[in-house]
Image (cartoon, rainbow, N blue to C red; front, side, top):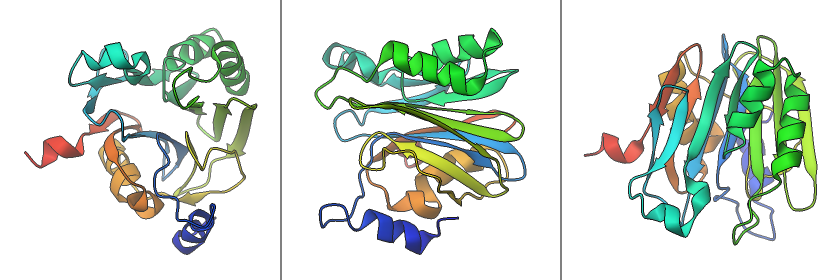
Length: 222
């Protein structure tokens, strides 16, 4: 498992500087129960919130006019299927969920959706990242401008695997500590806990651990 000091070493040697802005984050793992967590980190569109909806959790702009500038900033980030819980940074959440509902295996569902939709055609060629958790196995995938990757791993207590849209955007067999007793704590942890607290520009977060939860830090300080 990657410790906090190991993580700082990993992030301190990218072109001679410390990596502190990694964009969106998908985490899949287990505490005493399986969980998924998602975090929006953004420099361009910080005025967003995570909201629980009838179908899961959605990322929504506070100003609808922002959608004119970037259509990728609003989407379902988390949906719960009886065949696995889906987490992602974009509109591919829904087709992955639909494929799971149709009985497609999680790794194939992620692979197919990412291949079909490709990376985001924005100014940064932002990767699409996604995860699925089942009772005992986690799955993480990404599609970048140069590749599609999907991996699976056995869940271990109090740890997670994660993928980011920038910098830490390659799938590697590393896990990091993740400590939370429920979904509310998991949504906070991916913003304020462990290795995640050093990553810049958090905007909002969501998690599932048997139930749904969201964390909107800017609303907590009003």
